[in-house]
Every structure is written in C-alpha cells, then in structure tokens.
Amino acid sequence: MNGLIPRVHGNAGKTPNHALTYDDILQVVAFIRNYAEVHGISLPGRIPGMKSYENKKFLPCSTSKRQVYLEKCGIFGVCCEAIPQQVNFLIDESFDTGKGANPVISMYLLWRVMTGLSASISISFLPVGHTKFSPDWCFGLLKQKFRKAEVDLLDDFIQVVEQSSAVNKAQPVGSSNGELIVETLDWCTYFATLFKKIKGIKGFQHFVVNATSPGVVAARQAVDGPVTQFNLLKEDAQIMEDELPNILPPKGMSTEGNGTFTKR
Image 1 (cartoon, rainbow, N blue to C red):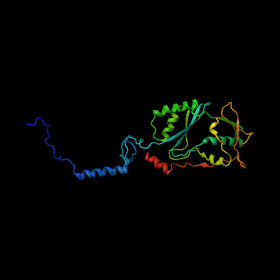
Image 2 (image 1 turned 180 degrees about the horizontal axis):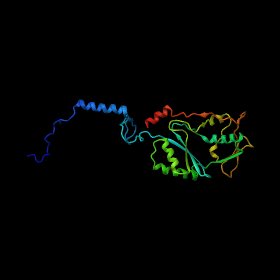
Image 3 (image 1 turned 180 degrees about the vertical axis):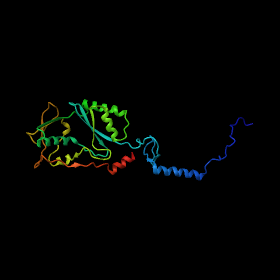
Image 4 (image 1 turned 120 degrees about the vertical axis):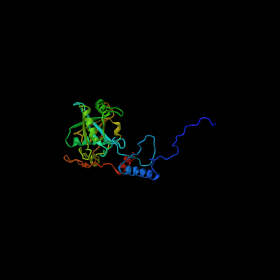
C-alpha cells in the first residue's frame, strides 16, 4: 500500500545482552583518563591545523615520541683547507653561546700579538651572502648522511658527523648528560677593560694587527682599498701575558626557555 520500505532487523531497538551499563561506561572513561594522566606524554600541537588548549596525552606505545619534543643542536664548523679537515663543534641546546663575535675577534688578535703569542696576524671576511666552497662541501657531505640516519640524541648526531666523511670531525661542546667538554672563556668581560670596539666594523673585510703597533688595527674595506687605523687600546690598560679570562659555566635552559620549549 505504501510501496517499498527498508528492511528492519528483528533486534532493532533492543539492548544487546553484552552491552555495558551507563555506570560501567563512566568507569571505563575515568580509567582511561587517569591512566593517561599518570603514564601519558604531553602532546601540544601534534595534529596539524588543530588548535586546542586542552592537555593532550600520548599513551605508551611501541613507536617513538621524538615528534613530540624535538631536541635542538647547534653546529659550528671550522674548516682547514690544507689538511683538509673540518672540525664541527656540536652545541647542545642546554649550553649557552655568545653573540656578536666580530668585535671580540679583533680584540683577541690584538691580545695575541701583545702577549707574544703571534708577531703579525691578518684576517679577511667574505662579503655578506658569500661563503667558502670548502665548508659548503663538508656540510653537504654531512647533510647527505643526516637525511638517511635516525637521530634521536646528541650521541646519534656525533656518529652521523663522524660517519659522513673522513674530512668531518665531531667535537661536542658538552655531553648529553650535561658534562662540559670544551671550556668557554669570558672574553667579552675580559676585553671590556682593555679594548674599545671598532665603529662600523661590518663595513670592513680585511684586518691586520702587528706586534710593532700594539693596540692598533689596520682595516680595509677592499683588499686594494685605503687603510684605516683604529687604536683600540684603552688608557691605563695593562695586559698580563699569563692571565686568562674566567671560565663560563653553561647556564642551561632558563625557566622561560623551558616553558616555551614545553609549549612547542
């Protein structure tokens, strides 16, 4: 009379015999939440495009959680073309590094010639945006190995650097357990009482210091350009040959840094 109608199962609307009661369902949900709070791993921003300020948890599983928190490691390569070999200083995120090294380098060169460690030193910087071929070659070999390797810890990255090529050598500044390997001296504080900064140092590419002119830096904007001399030695400054700056202990990550890292 009413035409075709969809078939209705005989048990439609009936509660299965094995169905849980509402109280049992609440107990299961409470158990999962409690288990996640105790054994889970915080998961901020894991799902792309999803914005939620609720705390998410990862339950223990066989897969790695390295995508939750990514460890950062700085790398600074010093290449010697004559050997050839590049020493890659690996700086863990918990070890603080200084900034603004250009003025300190010129002061360090003056300190070397004035303490008798060197008679004359010349140093040249490439223009902004230019790089040397040798470091690019060494970093290229390192990148090829890094793409195919699984790196979870600092020790894994050290092996990647060593296995990338015979020209690459790894030198960690500190170990994964916080042990300091390469000491950092407080040159900035030490030189602040001895030398003055060069004004407009970024405009010069070539520098020469000589023991015959203590405290004077000869700078050029171009290799065949005119020489500009800067007297950086402060009045009444006394340089001791056997004196070194204090050792800077690693500060570790600050409270603000830890908070930002956790949010990421």
